[in-house]
Amino acid sequence: MRKIIVPIGYMTSGSSAVTDLVSEFANVNNDYGIFEYVFLHCPNGLFDLEDKLFWGNNILRSDEALHSFLACMKDLYDKKHWWVGNYQKIIGPHFYERTEKFIADLTDYKIDYFWYYQEKTNLKMFFKLIIRKLVYGLTFKKVLLPKPRLYDEITLSYPSKEKFYALAKAYIYDVLNMIDTKGDDLLLDQLLLPYNLYRIDNYFDDDLKVILVERDPRDVFLQNKYIDCARLDGVAYSHKVEEFCEQFRKIHEMEIPNNSKKVLKIKFEDLIYKYDETRKKIIKFLGYEKRPVKAGKKRFDPNVSIHNTKLFLRPEYEEEGKYIAKHLKEYLYDFPQAKSK
Image 1 (cartoon, rainbow, N blue to C red):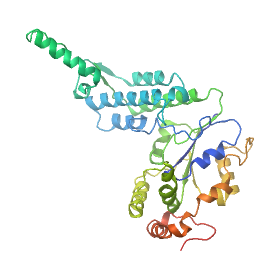
Image 2 (cartoon, rainbow, N blue to C red):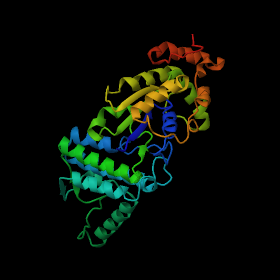
Image 3 (cartoon, rainbow, N blue to C red):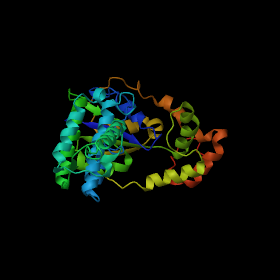
Image 4 (cartoon, one colour):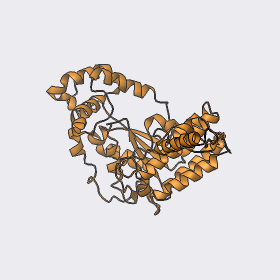
């Protein structure tokens, strides 16, 4: 049975190390490396569609939800230079066609009606409005052309949870089958996020294997602020150490607890300081005990990654490291050597 392997983290947590490690095994499809597959959890993605159709659904919300999802998937499909896009190439030429079928299967009614969302003016509509006004004036207010709209009919969906999840699961697996047609295991970076793991049993079978990577917040803060951002590759953590501590804690406390057997939690630092033990744990979780290795330690080398740990011991970062250690002590990693004071 094909496995769907999803390394995830909390921004700068080092989940790409798992991507590199797992890609060392044979019969693992990772053609696009650490490309992030966001169509489930991005704004107006599949999980947003779920929430809109199940929480406060009504005529207007339903129509907006379906159209916003389609528009988002069209952007991911069409935009070649968007770093999370270009699905036409990365997933396949039939991605958007399958997306349209998914929405068609969800649709209960189409009604000849319009609301304010359909009146949002774009450039094409602007010229139609000018023509409409000119015709109205030139005919001495006898001919009034129809008001231009983004689209005509409104689309409504009131699915049961059973119907929605059945259609959504079929859609997801059809999309994943487009990525690889050989039957190899799929290694898909950030297909999910820690904050939506509570949803996974509704969308995936037991072939899903999520590896969630956590990292010492001191190194998270320091690497992002002083290293990644200097390379224009940072993430949206505050550079003020006080705000970072508040933000880091709030992000973790907002997470809905999940104890799914589909999820393995590991520490980034364990991949380095307990490499053999942690690698065995990952192999067992994936069922790779007999899987051949095609490139051992060529993608992930703990002797290289060790230089990304214990940044807080550097004298120039000492004060910020101590502040984080005091305010986020329950998230610290117990380093085997040279612990901070």
